[in-house]
Image (cartoon, rainbow, N blue to C red; front, side, top):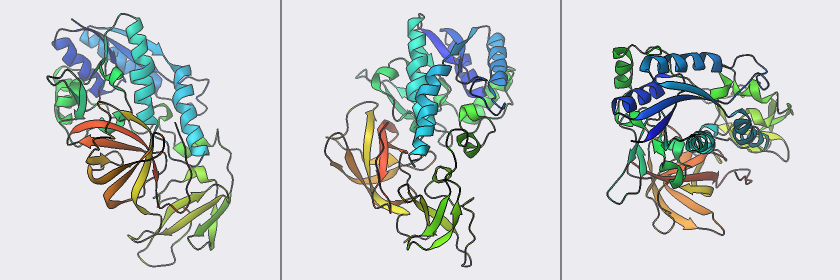
Amino acid sequence: MARILVGMSGGVDSSIAALLLKKQGYDITGAYIKTWSNEYDVFGDCPSAEDIEYASATCKKLGIGFEVVNLIDTYHEKIVQYLVDGYRRGITPNPDIMCNREIKFGAFLDFALQNGFSEVATGHYCRLVEPNTGTRYIAEGLDKNKDQSYFLALTHPDQLKHARFPVGELEKSEVRALAREHDLPNANRKDSQGICFLGKVKINDFLKTYIPDRPGLIVNSSGKPLGEHKGLHRYTIGQRKGIGIPSNQDFKAYVVVAKDLETNQLIVAFDDSDTPGLYCKSVVVHSHSFCTRPFIEDPPRECRVRYRDPRIPIERVERLEGDSFRVVFETPQRALAQGQVLAFYEEERLLGGGVMIPEGSLVGSSYSI
């Protein structure tokens, strides 16, 4: 019987993951992944102490062991630096996806294997399918409203060999019901939102401790000045709120369509279907990962451009120089930000993903992870 280390966040999903595995007779231990400390917490609002209390209390209730795994330095190197560097370069990074690859199924998995465990389990809403071929693959969770397969798009097959996702076959309502039925301490605890180590701190408040403001002009696509911004790292493509300039037309709002790092200009336009730079028909994908099989020779037919968006059809995939390739969508997609991840699917099956550079942007550049 496998020994499984369960990543316990303090939330209800990972708690039910542990409960289900224990019911199935596995030898399990709960572990909280510590990724932040007072050394880095300049706001004093890190929620880890409360999370650890909930995780520890849940393990005690389940009658299983509990420990805290210190991955603070690794997290700061792999995730925080990636996040800050991305915003500094003018892209929109995805720390949740990187955390899964580098921390949960990277450093945390390494810790588990080095300490006598054969697998790790998390509370992700996705399914791990093992067909007759013996090759595991990730499929969308049964609860389509909570499906988190997108966040695993950059994981590797070797990581999936040691992964389990026990709640993927359940609806969220069933998870809550099980937690109440077994009187777990976090049965009614709210789900966490946002980047895990920030707690209630807004991303711009966090970034200002790393990236100094650099004011510049806000201009329209013709270059006409409309106002001033505090720093390009504070904005992302498609953003409507918080730009700081009023619209001069009724029932129309400005939206960010580009960030020009060379001139330090924020480019905005009205949020219309024909606005240049807001919609794109194709993206270049780099820094890709295949969860199951390489799909360049047998191109995927569907993809997901961001979490919670539906899968959309792909018109074609074109191989480019090196390891990059172009993905052409059947219909133009709105507000795709450089640095975000494009996830590829075969119906419900996750094939992998890569970092995208939208084509047709008013200002272009490249960035690798």
